[in-house]
Image (cartoon, rainbow, N blue to C red; front, side):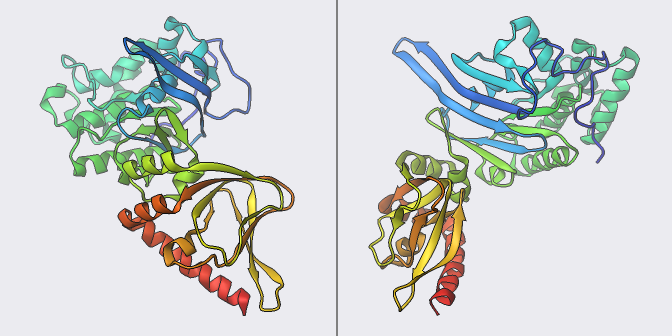
Length: 387
């Protein structure tokens, strides 16, 4: 379907990114969170909901924010949207320092730059569906008054709701209300759509249709940041941000452990240990007993196989986001190769102990199947090198 293009100026002639007067440096990400801390003062003391969080989102990405209940994912979204304020750190969205804006500036900035979709729709019950979609245009005065209804109808048509435009929200289903809420989020053509558990109150079939609509929006140029508890949906986005105990788990870890559910990822995150190796350092040695699984988070390693003559041959170079050490852990026995940090840079890895790795592989069929397939390929490569 044809959707509004990203990056257009509002009809009042102001560029949403700079109309607040708080423009950020050129060349930054569309969304950038830097060293973000959020603390709440409770009767029991200070509770840190977010701890030194750093994330970035680029134009055209479909990002899932996942984590257990209470992990901090909704707090993170509230920081990005300006609904809540950080204790310290910076939040930059579309070139604007959200943390620098006053309350009055925030309301207008949010209306121009963000389309927000909530779990419980939050349509005004006394207004028709089409009038709900017109509200952001009325508030920000972004389109001439005579054009707003036509634009609202156009958006409702694109989300399959034009025939129900004049009904009250209570007269349509939950899935239809969510589609109307998405049309409302697009009213001012914002560069970013933020959705907080948008499918959490829908049945699986309706949730799938809403997710398909988001995919169409991304294909049309929008950027979507979606909080979700649905791990299956999260694995189908272009990027996942996993939050555990107020901290963002390294994206390479999430990618390497693709297929784990939220509980399993939370367990893995709590057991991972960061280790830094100097250039040329041996990380694992061929023939040793296996004790750890490794995910590369920075730098690169060479994989070496010892020949019958005693000479070593390099069979592969692994980089950030790739892993090693799984063969001996899953197949039993000794290390099948030596892994060494490359000679020209440090290497940072996240290491997971044998017991936790084995438990995760026992419970996570999809991840285990993917690693089994990878192992077969690696063993073939090692066998060819050995010959």
